[in-house]
Length: 443
Ligand SMILES: [Zn+2]
Figure 1 (cartoon, rainbow, N blue to C red):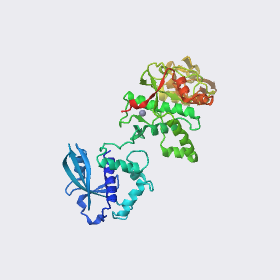
Figure 2 (cartoon, helix red, strand yellow):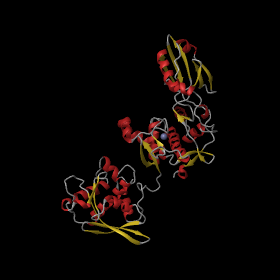
Figure 3 (cartoon, rainbow, N blue to C red):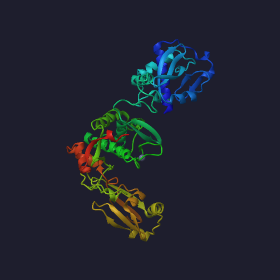
Figure 4 (tube, rainbow, N blue to C red):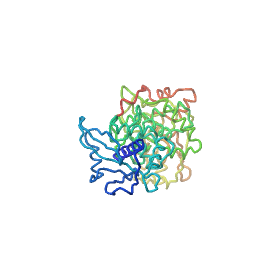
């Protein structure tokens, strides 16, 4: 974060210099001791002689407010004041050899200006560094934010200045904590979790679900090791796909599909599912076997009045998994440390099922194992399964896809095709919930 603050400061100074038409100087004419190179920004910063870069930025993080008071031949004076009393002044110049010709000149300044006006783009780190508000683009807004921050109209805060009226969330993306607008995060989740070819009302229901998953985590104080509120792991929080990945997946249809997804997100902006004045705990999955499941039958969660079994109208979604006895034995060994004999495999039986036909437990080699663990251990799409033995092979038939709790995405699609709205879909799959505004639950 300190890096972004530096970039903010340095870029703004650079621009201020450009605006003031300060004569440009060649970098080669100035003593090297007074320069600090900031690799993450690709900029050179000049501070008062004898001041280390570390001391300078440490001072910036102290109490008080900074203001940029005047432009001088080699830079500008940055003054820190506490209660209106000037405390410290620093003479600064910012040099950036952006075009790589070995000198800092007015052409570098013009390049920055073009960049900020959107006429040019930077690649990689430089593009990221100039994107102060984190909206994914380097625009004039970033420049204005940097300027107001230096003029004392907004303060130097230890994270990117955020666009007004926009809510932010910290997401762990491939293990790295990334701060991004909440609605962008929701769109990236919807794009990852539901086919963009689904009807708009189903995508809207999905957008509310994705936002609700994040807000419930924030509300209950769940965090990740890197401090992020949510992660991009579908097995832990929910899947999220980066723009780069989506471009790869959608190819020429990118604009069309991203347009549909963002419309679903915008039309539900800020909405989350609530139950009795608190954000609801939301689960969703791909397809049901005709019914959804009570949460306590699947997860180690207490029963919830809104996570109960309801009918789901999608077409039957069947899949088959074929395992030789040896392959099955291998799975049982890995998952349960069991090595059933051929006879024990033939004698294997379902002990009990839920009211919606999902397997609660299976008895194999005298041991009772849970349907959920059995499903995962054998790569079955759900816990509603049956099997036949053909020669020395188990042929499983599986109904539906996913854990079965909350909204079935294929069910949502079927409802939308029958004319239901996103709100009606959510009311069906999460009975007793209402829609609320997420803003109150963000830190
Ligand atoms: Zn997570």
